[in-house]
Image 1: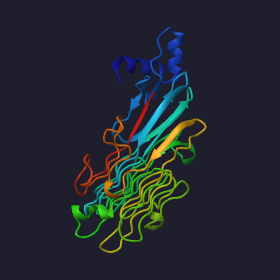
Image 2: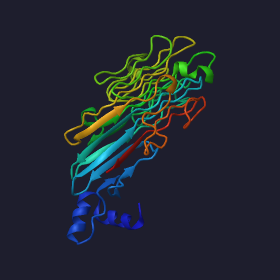
Image 3: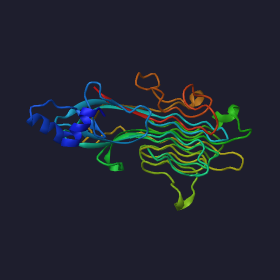
Image 4: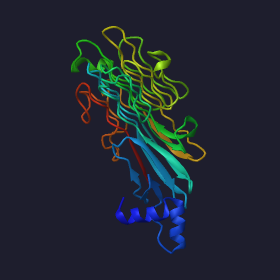
Length: 321
């Protein structure tokens, strides 16, 4: 935040109340909207970059009509080389209400090596944790009306599942136990030996391994924790199951493009991340705003973390008109 803006915010506050005070004093309105207190103007808007986390968005005195683009995060590659899946993509045009507060979540890439703290879920975007030998699930990216809650989702791109494990535990076999891509209407199933971890759908979480009530089993906005974590999503992906020396990758999380009363959408669409020989590839990766978001970790991705025990790439959210 620029020094002048910092002094103004400290004196008057942020958002629409600041705009009104500036108008009353005859000064210019600073921003069309605010992200964590910093002012942004259209048409340029705001780009999160590859910076995972929650952000608070406050609209100024006038409603704004914007294009929203978002990529879910990529899955991690555990130390046994299973390839992380690629994050999904969602976009829509929306008119956001004056004075309304929104929460934006930019998904965190799936953990590649969660030891010495195994089974910890991804903190931003609901990606499921893993055991340190397999990869964790990537988090979803989304915009919510008000706080993060299932009923408040307006637009969401699914995170990808984490990689599993199969002998001889190297780059040559990494794609045969890849995490499922993020949604898309559905998250993709993880690859590997049956029973596979399935992706989230518009109405249900994916199935897979379960560790009982002590660890997340997947559901609304949350991927399952297991041996190959499920991707976060509208409904999260299932976790890979330990089959002795092998385990499949986690399933990807599903997307949501249905809008919300405070986030009405038009022209909404979603794309699933790469599958088949495109494992680990993020959806819509030719978009000029993409910038490396959502790639899964592993040797099949040209950008990101190519080795074993590497984190998936974070997601991205862009708001402009």
